Image (cartoon, rainbow, N blue to C red):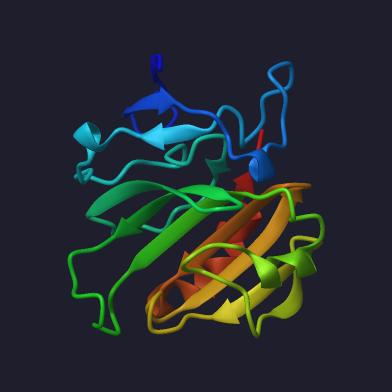
Length: 189
């Protein structure tokens, strides 16, 4: 495998890896959010102090990130039918503290994502949209659900950025009032 450095993804060294057949949504001629598949190099597994800014998630720009985060972490996971990469901003409070501030932005590459309602079948371990409700934010249809024990307190919003590409944003309770502003500012340039 050939090592490449992607400054857009928090300056970590990444290793190009083949996509699972079910997750391919772009060609070499038209790279998108899900091409090439990236495998996190565990040698680079570290916490960013301070947290990275609005370009921490490869292929996405975040216009608005609330203040008060002390660290951030990137993560990549593969599943049988999909793969995901994400960045989580957080403060130093305990996860169960109701004042804990956390923001998790994720891209899921899954060929089964054609409409927003497909998110209810998202083949991932955490951050599923079972029991989610449809809503409109910034003129786009999205799914929204309350956080659960595995994700912590707060609210999660998800949408199909383009067929095969899902974007999700999870904000802890202290950030829920800002969630619409955060989601409105997420763009895939």
